[in-house]
Every structure is written in structure tokens, then in C-alpha cells.
Image (tube, helix red, strand yellow):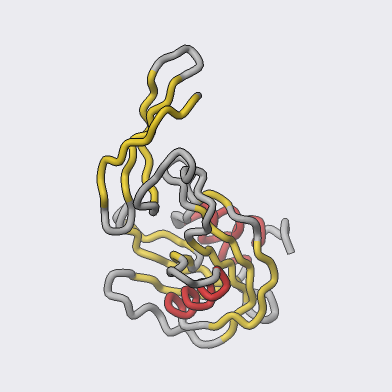
Length: 188
């Protein structure tokens, strides 16, 4: 595939929709639809060199529980289990964003940063959004989310509770995989 040009189709408040015009190896045109946070996507910016968002896998102090949020997601019109996450604001580092997002969505605070993984694409079949996955220890009391545009219920879950949730509840892909590995002692 060879990318020929990018055509902006729609300009939403948070995301923009583009058509990517490719030439296949046999010379045919292929149009691929995608969304981006970038207001002016070009061939040079498509691989998106900045980190857009953070995802927070959060443990309690003795590592006996993981924080998972039950979140109403508008795109699927349903509740799913997820990790706290959010966009990095202009001028904010990913660590600052992780601290802010965890506090906003759960009311708890990061007390130790265990790992930060390299950037990854959040949904490579749909977007060029890059996320930073951060693993932390946190403490405090759940305060919930006061934003009327987000419905998020945080909770601490044991391995047994996570395994039960995995059988009964829809998860985001990233939270499902990490939670499964943790709950089944495949990561420490």
C-alpha cells in the first residue's frame, strides 16, 4: 500500500474524520476511513508522534486489589469495565495527566509509579491515537466522578472478583487482558 493523500471529511469538536487514499500493490485505489485528534492530518503526521492519552492500571498498597471502573460508554450505549484513562491536556506531561485523571475519575491518588510502558495505539483499526499505559499504586477514598458528561463508578476488586467479572461483564480490550493476566497470576 502506498498512501497518496489525505482528505479531511468532518471536523468534530474532539475528533476529525479523514479519508486516507491509498494505492494498492496492483494499482487500485483503496479509501480507508479513520479519525484523529489532529486538526490537520498530513502524510507526515499520520503516525502521530505525540502521546494523546493515558491509561492507568492501579493497585492498592498491598497489591491484593486492582482498581477497575464501571463506565457508561456512549459509543456502545452500555456499561463496561475499564481502567481510569483520559486525554493529556495541552502542556501536561503524561504523569500529570495520569494523576489528574485518576483523581477526577476515582477520587484516589497515585502514591507510587511502578511502570510506564512505551506508547501504543489505542484503536489502530479506527484511529491514530497514541496512549501511554502506566501502572501505579494508589490510595485514598473513592470520590466518584462529578462530571455530568461521564458516568464512572470506581471499585477495588480482588482476583476472585475480577475472574467473576470477566465471565459476566463486558470490558474494554486493554482492561480485559491486563485484568485477566493479573487475576490468573500471569503477571506480578
